[in-house]
Image (cartoon, rainbow, N blue to C red):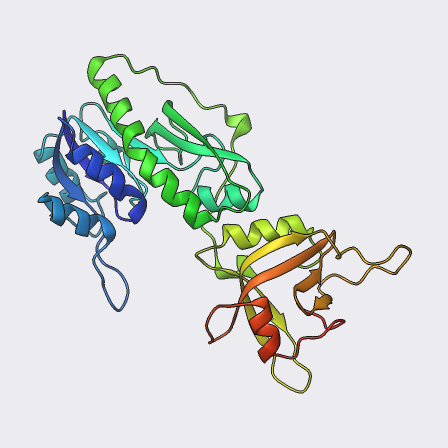
Length: 316
């Protein structure tokens, strides 16, 4: 089958490599142009060049000129993954068999740009990849294939996304083979089960200590590697110091306090010795790996040797 592949970010690279190693022909790789002041080549461009595949980087693939160029390649099917632009019907119709997309969630849950992060943020224990037929709605097209995996209790969004990325190519290839054989069985999504996964912002990183400790732990996991969970320590006699939390655990042993004692307010430091424990709205969170703003990442013990955090002080 003749394929055009649209992808930009790292999530799509293993799928490109798998398709390039298959009997199918990848005609061209379409990526978004380099962005930012440094204008580094996107991961898909680097991978395509390494594989010797033609690369095309239009400002928008939705322009009339882009659609004409895509049609001129005469692909049978368009494969999309981590591309970064919503495709118009004129693009979707550029191939006789339409377009399919690899999405990192169990659709219809977590439609949008950050499905892996929101699954971890919400404490899901299972997720997966979905391949679906692209329609004008956002991640709303008929499902063609699903691959489910368990989410490990301490797994970060970055680690989970890497696992899903590595598994995606086999699922995409399986769906392509079914389409080629005429055995694909599209399954309509149940709109009543749909949820959204919008792109994360830096503001999502601020820890609200009134939330349960388990939810804050999930926040730390979900926002790794970006934008990171953080809290501020209003240092006595100094400017507030931002603490970026890289790893945290729900504390159990020795964290509950004595029977009948008044619970500490959310955000209060309840232990600052061998461990750094902070009260949450429900339970206590152990901050295991921390990065003071502008400094290197360090253990809680290292932090406490260099900064006078004390029991009773408030984070927020």
